[in-house]
Amino acid sequence: MFLGSVIYDKRRSMHLTQTELAADVCTQNTISKIEKHNISPTVNILTKLCLKLDLSLNDVFSDFSSNSTSEEESILDSLERDLLLDNTGEISEKLSMLHSKLSDNDLKQVDLIKGAMEYYDNDYDNSLFTLDKVLQLTKSDVYDVYTLLTYLFKGMNYMKQGHKDRAQYYFEMIESATKENLQIPNANEIELIYICKSLAGAYVELGMLKKSQEFSNKGIELAKSKHTTYFVDYLHYYAAEAIENDDQHTQEYRELRDAAYYFAKLSDDVKLLDKMA
Image (cartoon, rainbow, N blue to C red; front, side, top):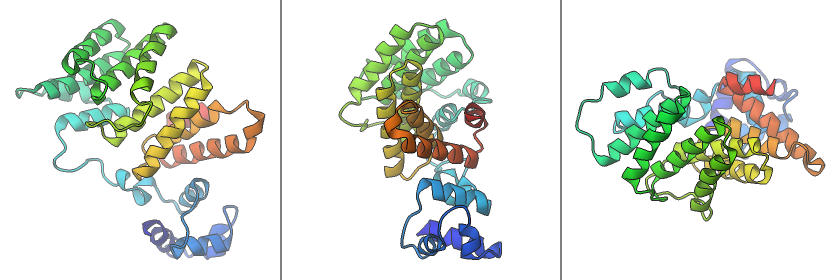
């Protein structure tokens, strides 16, 4: 409902007819149906329309409408979100300003963030040590999202060091824990989709394309169910990579890669755009 109104209002403000907007995108009838809320546009059509109308993800997706979340979100939740979204510039400084007494649950989050930052700084030994502190606090409970995120960063740590067998061990621990579903009691959607995105990318690098496709699809479906766009550009990209050399899925490959490109374009994801160039 919301999308149709946004597209209608923006088209009218730009003095475009439905036919002019539809050119090289879809049919005039499709535009009419979208604006009347009779159909939802496909990913490819929506992203092309947004680019043509100069609409950003801020305009069409609620999770990009603000740089902050609800007032109840803690400082640690905000820092973790920045970490997963690769906005790491001020995280270390902000962590150093935390002076209040922290609960065990807070400490799990703090050590996860510290360990991940050490990983990003290529300080692999200290990263592994800090991440092991998280597992002590979670008691390696696989129904605790901080256990799964720790396994993920330990796996990526070993990947960076060239220890693919060790990396695969931790990735399989996550795979086993999420085999039935992605319902982790203390997890939010960004954490779960980040795990799917990261595993999909790691499995592409390991040449385990079927598993990459599985986690790409899990992430895409979760994003759809939660009405969010977190990491959907990378999820479509890795889904495409997983079937790139499969002659039976040539059309699907093109559609997935197009979707990845348009989502990356809308979110101004320079890293992925450069990767796809």
